[in-house]
Length: 225
Image (cartoon, rainbow, N blue to C red; front, side, top):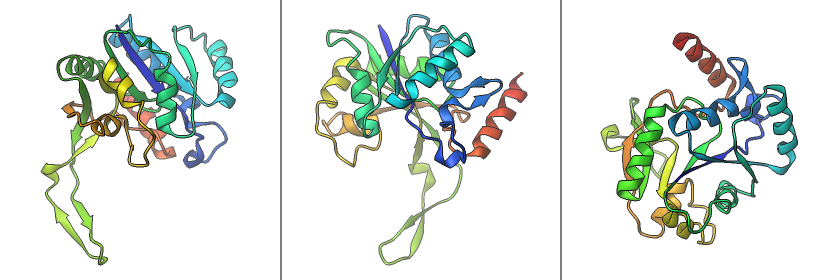
């Protein structure tokens, strides 16, 4: 059985409005609904767990009624940090479950079905997988003295989600105490000494963070329609 934990805790401050970014409409539908639907498209039996702050859950239910969104999912309450939010979502995955669990940003609605399937298959083989894309811009490293230098961008990759793991592995990893160094789920698993395998992501799988991202999303939908 496959599970996906979709973390949506944003408050939308960088969007410049009162509506959290995961609820903003793109192509006539809230971002978060598009995100959940693509995982259902990738695997109709996928168990979907949505993690939302407590004060946003009633609004989400209202949106589901308004948009007649009936895709089956469970809701968990967000925590103080992303780590704690994932921890709360992971608590809804049975301890004896056999399969793969992924963690995905709620504001990444354009992950492709192919990438999702690649991540889950990779996790079954390797235990822990993250999707990545090449760095296409020049990268400079900041030095302590205030200088900087160009580094070989071919040695780096940009990390996306979903990050996928065998269920017992992720359960074990999230029993660790929280550390500020836990910037994503793979870093939590790495702290146990496990290696992370990389699979190819898709360039459109951006994290919608600013108003320009929303405009890009609208144009992407127009081009694909």
